[in-house]
Length: 381
Length: 164
Ligand code: HEM
Image 1 (tube, rainbow over the protein chains, first blue to last red):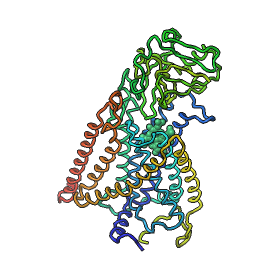
Image 2: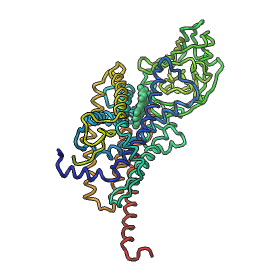
Image 3: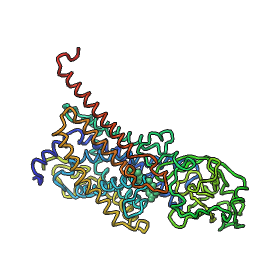
Image 4: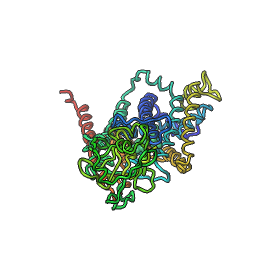
């Protein structure tokens, strides 16, 4: 017995029988989407534990560009999955009206789990996309909300995959049934269009991190070559509340904590120490990145001068007051790396204020939010 | 029952639905999946987020708005294009509509410059709104060319001189 009006039920069945809405199409889209979400989840979790490292986790300093790649892949894969997700929801649409609404306890729980799957997936891509252009139209902080929603969505995805595994396997194994030519779209045409859409989305955004493609980045919120000294800025000195006189003759870099000799160094002191240059990317958590040549004093030279132990870990503090990114941590591997610098110059010029004048941290393989600017203190542990 | 709907992982072996339903694989997946969801819910309730009810409203809201607004609206568009657009042009028009909707969705915040900050010209340095209009124009131009190609193709098929 159908609770739907007969005409609606008939329309549902007619649409459901089209190749663009059948099991095979859903299986193919679902598989692609499953791969994309898995990639997003793993790269996202990685970004999370790099920023909130549990005791067992030491993020290496090499390869220097690894985080740039993993987070670039996160954002690119997330954006490319938008057309897949919309296509999947469209293709599965008629099944929303399947009857009976609940056939068994298992079926009911499966359908219930679709609510967090659909809502969570849409929330993840919507919040991620809004965050890319610095828009936060919600009353919570982006990373913890996106993080919690990721677990909920992936959990719901596991339920969905388990429920659909055998149907999917069968639909993928069965040879594509020959169908009478339909006046509307074939499966091949539909999936081809979805793939082309994913490609287009990638081409017009990925230039924010893949330099040679930057001219194609028509819809990207960033250009990796636009900014003072040819580099984008996430937080300006003014937004961080940095006093315009920061870096004048009163500036001191303090090195304190677990050291034999605490240091207090002026800019002149820092400039007279041996300088080391390194070409390193700024790799923003938001998926854009850009490389530059930085020069300054290796953190490990300062630690040696202060008589810090070999396994020293360091909290790097900014002149910025408050805010979750006003300090960052260097684990013992990062602190000991020759290219982890307190940079004084970019491309031979003193740092622009918005890049952290007088002194900023720049190290290999770190998210941009951990490349602390306007540094005034190293606390050694 | 009007449709032989897919059983979830073969809910109910044998003929006739059972009350419990589900294969062992389904129940294992349910246990693992809900445990993973619990990690997210616990994290949402921790003080790092502090606004769990608001997040829950957003996630639920997306599901509800999709199922009851976006999907019906898409169905209405599909019906309208079936009624108003001649069969020969229907596929390119529908694809162009879908692609336009997609590009508007992913670029909306940037095109409207919601995240722009007066002190930081490196955010949104390119005019995404203008680029979006150009891309949409290109898509509809391609769709128009495709329609023209199909019309010519259909004429040729019908004309007696076809194949000469
Ligand atoms: C359009 C799609 C997406 C975009 C643009 C996007 C963007 C981002 C960005 C910018 C971050 C960095 C947040 C930060 O550290 O400040 C992030 C983190 C993360 N993303 Fe996504 N994301 C998308 C989709 C997804 C999906 C589908 C998943 C999971 C299946 C996911 C899981 C995560 C996780 C777990 C994190 C770590 C959050 C944290 O650091 O606590 N994302 N994402």
